Length: 424
Image (tube, rainbow, N blue to C red; front, side):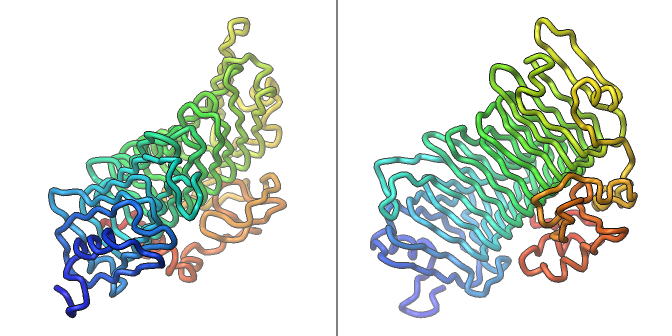
């Protein structure tokens, strides 16, 4: 209820006032603890100069719950809207918006629908793209997709930072028209594919526990990179025609399939990785296109001799290599790579305990590892966890320093092996 005569009695009444009165500076709505069974729509043009904030007055997302019941929470803005410390229950739809979620719990799917209109402006700029940023939040959708991006026109940028995604499908959809997805310090617990997209994707210091692909990368002429990541299970990484993908300083306990061809290109840099399952390069450009297309493999640790290359050009017979040395001799790739067991501590702790991968990597520009520990940039440990000398900096100790910004990882480790926090 309203705390005073000057306060709004509901979120709907606050939004109605905002829609009716164009804001010419930042607007902050502090929401009192309680459950709000209402749906609201932010009209276009509510502010053309600054941010609009909806935040928990107490700062505790568990105490402010927006549950519209059978309705969906809908925003349809051309403004910058920031949601902080709230719990949303039910599916949410966004159109043509710049939205930021921080320290939120989102129990239901997110549909980001781009209806970008170049004739309209924000801050005098007619070229902006809608953006959805989610940080330090939990997105869960047990029976559906956590985040679905449907591009109708233009592009859509998605940023995920220190988030936990739990559901049937992770991030689905995208565009080839300049937009992309940036993922940092996230954990995915997904039944099917964690990321299935044709957009450019950059993934840093994230963990994947899924039944399908960690990354299923469709036809694309853009680029992408994966570094300091751990793929614990599932079908691994699948990158199709036309993608340009870098995979480095990762630990991957799943298969990796990379496709390069003479018609569409496909440039791959795969280095400083611990690769525990089969690696397949499918290539329709003939043997020489492995070099012509910019393919680079080196300083990798393979658990077994399980490298397979297909050359599918009409004049070249298929070549299947089951030994790393044959792959090295035939392609001049992986000159400094080797076969060994790095002996990971466990399926939820990718720290290698065998010194075979310590200080064996190629010089890197990465200054830290998946836990934020400093890297030996000249001779890094192969894989996602850095081991300097014969010891590794404790991930638990590091999380004591970081628990305010990486709270989900702190909880996961303190529960001694429980992978995720159940917020449903």
